[in-house]
Length: 160
Image 1 (cartoon, rainbow, N blue to C red):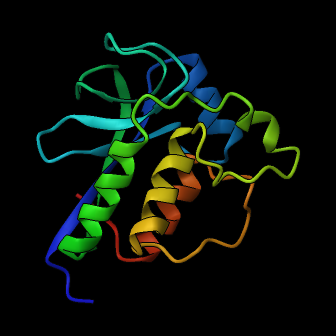
Image 2 (image 1 turned 90 degrees about the horizontal axis):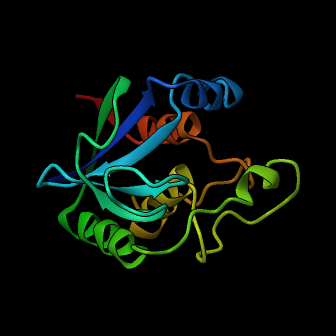
């Protein structure tokens, strides 16, 4: 693959107890991931209403929360893959947050079911659909921000 484009993913941990708890329980230092769009806006899935936007998949302002930690990962891809990735994300706007996903970690739920999303499921599925990521194998019911970061770094993503 000749890289002529890139997607940018913003991995964060907010300055809040709930965010630190999510990061701790998911064995990492991130609690959330958004796609950083070319205009600086963030596209992702959230469980809460922030930045004037409702919960679920939305485009939000880059300063919608106070981030204690922020890493932007640039992931190489073709222009076609970037277009497919972004089209997939835009087609998910207004879908609800997947509140059942937390319980799905205990049960064998298919995280690729496109009726609702958590942040890391959404970004991982967009990568699969665009052919940036291979079809992921393990753990099909547990895609958390740190595992999303690891998978994207394995295909050449690097912190900016």
